[in-house]
Amino acid sequence: MPMLLALPFPWALPRLAPGARPAPRPMTDPASSDAALMALAGNGDRAAFNLLVGRHGERALRVALRILGDAAEAEEVAQEAFLRAWQAAASFDPARARFTTWLHRIVVNLAIDRTRRRAGAPSTGLEAAAELADAAPGPEADAAAAEARAALAVALGALPPRQRAAIALAYEEELSGAEAAAALEVSERALEGLLRRARQFLRSRLEGS
Image (cartoon, rainbow, N blue to C red; front, top):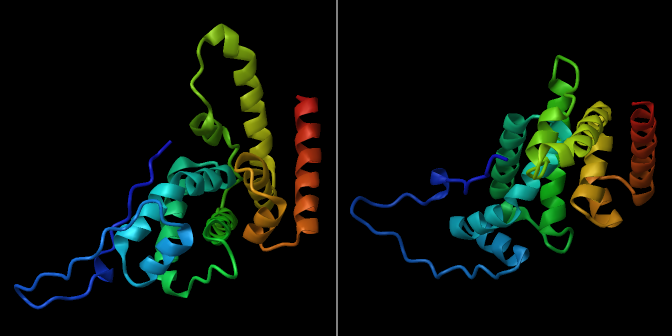
């Protein structure tokens, strides 16, 4: 899986007079909460925000990958999501949403928008399955499992984007119903409807194959 690197934001740094040195910043505590790091990021602290990227980058990438089914596009979406989060850091309100819920919402919206802009058919999800699959210990022992993963990937890729997003958030990332619903900007009842339709579709596809 592509690794999401810490994002450089040179335009966020204040302009200094020639020969001047930037004022030293206190060391950011890596154990700080997401909300505390976002408060620092809102004041221009790139180191604090890069801790958030390191903490949540792979999850954002996995969610984008499941929705898009393409590793390169997923990485672009994850990068864009963190860029938008950085630009909006000063307006982030932890009383309204957890950082992870807020970030998932950005990732999901960007990924779904990208699927809608595609001119061709939706991805089968085979590349996503290859990226997300664990290493196989042996060809004979894993032949059936590999076939099942491939069939599941094809079925997942055929789901509408919002249903893929619901599956990714609720089952793969194990978000609570409230968190997954908030990320998708729907009610918990609507989320359950998305999940129910997705399960029914997957079941019919997999039983048919």
